[in-house]
Amino acid sequence: METKEIERLARRIVEGDMLSVSRALTLVENDEKEGLKLISKLVQSTGNSFVVGITGPPGVGKSTLINRLIEEYRNLNVKVGVLAIDPSSPLTGGAFLGDRIRMVDHTSDKGVYIRSMASRGWQGGLSASAAKAVCVLDSAGIDVILIETAGAGQNDFEVSSVSNVVAVVLMPNSGDVIQLSKAGLLEVGDIFVVNKSDIEGTNYFVSSILSILGASSVKKPVFSVSSLSGKGIRELFNELEARRKKFLMQGRENVKIRNLAAVLKSVAKKRIMERFEAKVNSGKVEELARMAAEGKVSLEQALERLSS
Ligand SMILES: Nc1nc2c(ncn2[C@@H]2O[C@H](COP(=O)(O)OP(=O)(O)O)[C@@H](O)[C@H]2O)c(=O)[nH]1
Ligand SMILES: [Mg+2]
Image (cartoon, rainbow, N blue to C red; front, side):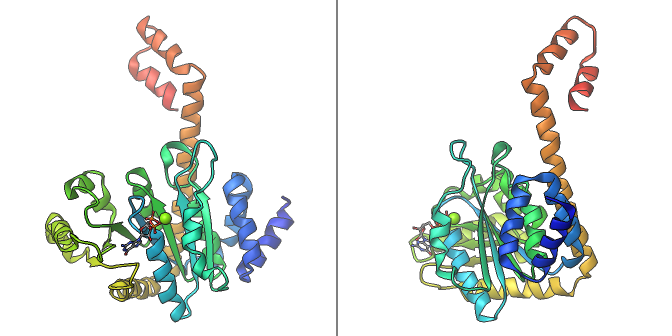
């Protein structure tokens, strides 16, 4: 794409043209160089979107919850963008349909933009494009961006670098709370949502989370909701809105810097991993191991060459 064309695309995005937003998201997913060029054109128009990471094990009801939150935001005429980051399938490289299907309620609403992104890349990490996608939606005038990431582990740690608040969604009987803690899910969350409170075991589950959170639960509230019936959603939403109000009082410049830092971090990480994988695949590791075994290089030198 020519520079002129990228500039034109950037202008349309800032005007709020959602067709151009879709084109831009495809660009940032598929073309790193051009994607970054576009982001640098957009960056002066960013800094206003409040980003909520919604994470948790598959099946706990994240997409259903997001549908409810969209409803609440739309009642206040807040523009919402959803990025559903799905575990990449090595077969299709694509996203599961389920998320789209559960979020169709809002597809005719112009104030709602929903996009699935494949997480691709190594170890199912949060899509390296997610931080860029946030910049695109931000510059298009989206007020709130909800990022759904499935699963535990690596994903969840990365979602916090692009989110202003991370909500960890769980459900009663979704396993041992101590295991959840070990998986890092309790550390990454700013807010905890126990969904499916309409099924049995909710009270016990909530109290075991509270006891594990201990003193930190003052700052890390636990909400028990049913995304099916809508019960408890309003309380959760009020908390999110209170946090957004605080966010809007911050300097915009700092938000811009934080968003760009997330872009740089994710792209750099991807590049470093790609370089490393190329070395591994080219037999470089074995070559260095042989040299080290023959005493031609020290292990320290071998590592230096492998990681530079
Ligand atoms: N009983 C009950 N089921 C729910 C609730 N929220 C979602 N579900 C169901 O749980 C299943 C998984 O929901 P989904 O939103 O796709 O979960 P995700 O994988 O975390 O996005 C679906 O069959 C939903 O209908 C709830 O509050 N109560
Ligand atoms: Mg989902």
